[in-house]
Structures are given as C-alpha cells and as structure tokens.
Image 1 (spheres, helix red, strand yellow):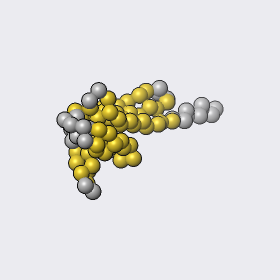
Image 2 (cartoon, one colour; image 1 turned 90 degrees about the vertical axis):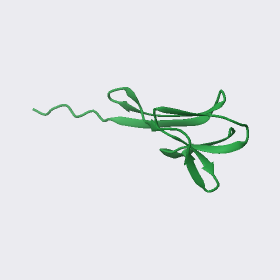
Image 3 (tube, helix red, strand yellow; image 1 turned 180 degrees about the vertical axis):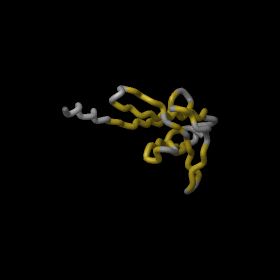
Amino acid sequence: MAGNPAEARTCATFGHIGLFEGAVWGDRSIYCDPPDLLSPLPTTIQKKSGTTWMTVTPTGDGAASYVCKGSAFNTYRLKEAPGKQTTVACS
C-alpha cells in the first residue's frame, strides 16, 4: 500500500527598510507553508560610510531601528539582505 505523497513545503523570505517616524526601520521574516507559519529572521541595519558599511544597530529578532540624529541624506541597508537599501534624510 503506497503512502500519501509528502506535502511540498514552500517558503518565502520578506525584508523591508525605510524611514518611519524619525527612524530607519528594517524588518525580515520567513513564511513557510506548511505549516502556515511566519517567523522572524535576524535583522541588522548598516549605514554606508564612504565605500564601507558600518553596523548601526544590534541584531534584532525580526526587526531593528536606528533613530535619526540629523537630516543629512544617508544610505542604509539590511546586513542580512544587502539588496534591501534606502537613501533617506537621516543621519
């Protein structure tokens, strides 16, 4: 007697970074089905300084934020997802 085929598991990761109420805010998560579960992923914000990236937040569990101290334009990214970048008036 043959058993039921195993359900195929599908997962998708999500990440966002942007300016929100005076802070650069980043979040990352992974959604998998089955079991229809959204889980946080490590999230760290980095700020571009010349040709290098400086970490400006501790690693958060699904989210991190950096409070702006000025309004000069800077570029920020998620360390764990370097393609997620934003340039905003926040220093």
